[in-house]
Image (cartoon, rainbow, N blue to C red):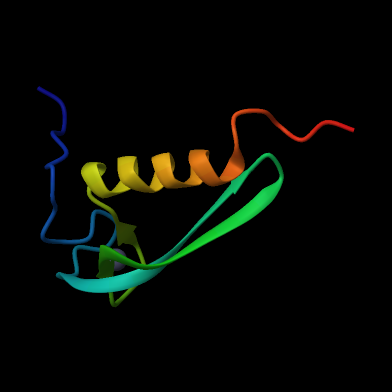
Length: 76
Ligand SMILES: [Zn+2]
């Protein structure tokens, strides 16, 4: 069996430091436009800065961004 990635890790997958619950600013670029969503609940590694967002939260973020970005890319 390969490595199983847990749904919600308690420790950083990169350095092994305990993860801390902390709100982050989620940044994503859609259609060459930068979207920033503040106060996103996430787990953050204090040592190397690795961030973990729950799948459920990530899905909501993607939905939010998709609605803001609109259905069609801006074409000129
Ligand atoms: Zn780390």
